[in-house]
Length: 158
Ligand code: PNS
Image: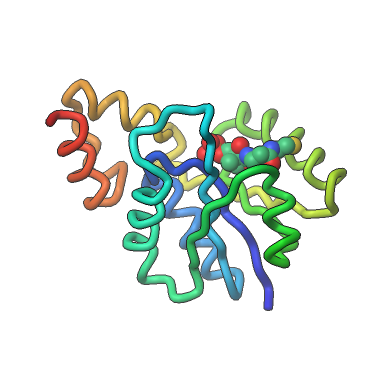
């Protein structure tokens, strides 16, 4: 069984994330989407809400499962027998940051990191930008799944 993890905050999931998850699901037998529980960072959606959203928008992929984790990602990998992490790379500055993280994670545990170039259609996209645009009434349709689009409107515009 070839397993990988797609980790992140997913607050909320964007079409860029979904593209990486879907492409990973075509390459691997099992993809675990791991949502970080980060008590230090304020979030728009709770971890359980994010999990529910992720489960709904990935339901077309039977080999994708969604879990939450806290602490080190490599510990989650070890506990779940997952040998590799998939990370999307949007721009060169992502690579700068992710390369160090990948090397550190490998040093800590031997867990590999695989970089997947983001679909250029989404290379400018991030959850924080999506939230900012939605907060000020901008149109984020096409950048996030429809479910997320509706929830953003509901939550940010009251
Ligand atoms: O979507 P994000 O917020 O960019 O995701 C970042 C995430 C969750 C992948 C990263 O912060 C992470 O792996 N956190 C867990 C703590 C950890 O393992 N840190 C790495 C030490 S080298």
